[in-house]
Image (cartoon, helix red, strand yellow):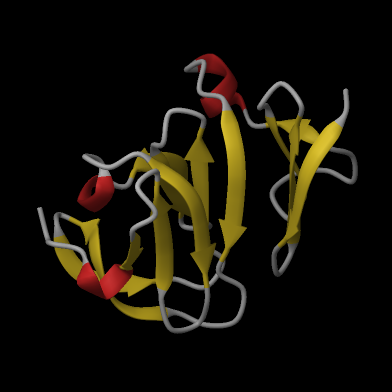
Length: 134
């Protein structure tokens, strides 16, 4: 196994290997990397992961019944090799597809205290607050 991406969160660490498998360790896991079975079981190959570390991201679109809600601290977003974005957090650990951008081929993701950014294959950047609610 060769790791190609490592991201640290508040209390856990994520790593993606050269086969696109996601591993984590820390809170909710052990001291050694463990395979995240959701992605492996669903044959989802990952290329990126981002973690919201500091505080809640307020009024985030599409995370709860397609309405705006807060994205909690500790939220993780995952990017697949086919441009799909998934998200989860400590209170809801099973990843879910992020619907507001499901019609775009996303190539990069970033999270901060004030927004989430998504870059698509056409070079267009979307902010969480510029996305239409579905």
